[in-house]
Image (cartoon, rainbow, N blue to C red; front, top):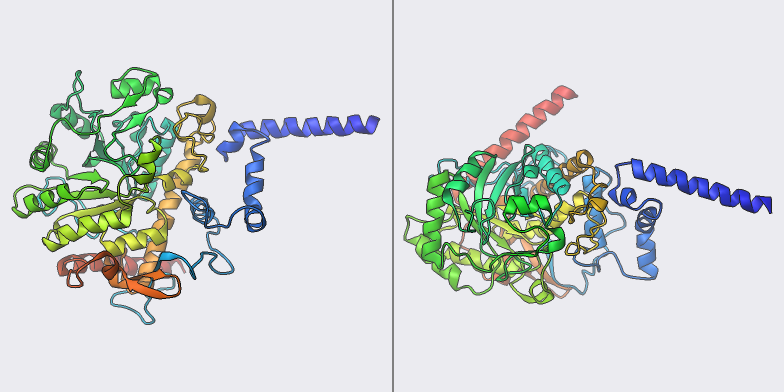
Length: 521
């Protein structure tokens, strides 16, 4: 009988010791918040491929992000081995719409020739944001991969701070989302300030837009551009929603709203009502702040885009960038019908908008940004081939700091402390560790984009063209990206002067990195 008590005592002591260790350690938020039992998550992840192969699903079936996609983000953020062995397990033979990137056998014009290129070379945007319209603070974004708009409120303060510090380390931009610019955004990372329909951060005591407050705000923080949000992919035409469970005292004070009450933003802007008045608003904001000003929108009815292109073709007024959010994009809370069925998926929506600008000869005057599961390399490459100049990563950036796709963002019970304001869960999120992982993820994305660019034969992903990607119909046929989405083959990917500029920038970086490597050796 004594041996039974000894075993029970030993088990209890081991469990107690493990509990203490789990509560003290800061490497894994899920274990810190759920001591002992949290280890089951990593056990299942370790043996997940075997379990799914024989019992549940394969590596490419899970949604919104497959196991392979999440594994790549997790490994990249931790600087672990993010390679895959034994070939692809995607159903290439039967899948429709499967993209294939067409590599060159021999070195293309200006392609990097060093083995695997230099992984620390940065990837600046191929265009100067605000340059064509002469904005006072026009600039060339230093990274083609940036962090998408996620508000403080939807995400915890620690999550926002982790992403901001990560953005500073990686030299990329962080979009504030519509929930205003909080103290958590002020940790060194450059930001894009988003103006939503409730005008949080730049509204008066009655909730109306206040240009003076906007000017004061952007002058007090490292704001590089301003984004006017018309709609977002997961709930276009609906307006933002922050459940009352997540409206803490701090968020209520920052936004100027009641604590603990659902915060529903209007579905439309009050300060403008059509394209003409919207462009007047854009120009007034740009003139007052000197910053580039753009718009973010999902794509549905195309009338607005036709009118925007027509107005911009007349000259004088225009947006500096266009951020297209795919209907497959994510959000903290949305009705199922909006999340599933409203707005075009990214590829269709973006192509429809880009074609209108291209036909009017306006593409070189606008920086195109894409979002909606584009934080995965293969999706991003297709987006670049369709014409984007930069991609924004939202949920992928969340995964880099520990998101496990629990899909509890709307409940305030995110188990890893990212999409919650509950101290019970946010205590597990270690900012100093997660910020480094966010930066690692951004750098890994840029590295893979650079390597694919080299394979295609160009020095920069912004030079990947529709001719470099085919869309497969299983193993039966392949159709070029241009033909699939109705692009005119005569449209240049970039104007010759822009091509020359980015090639010179990239070749100079490559030469500098090569010289540094030789000196180190």
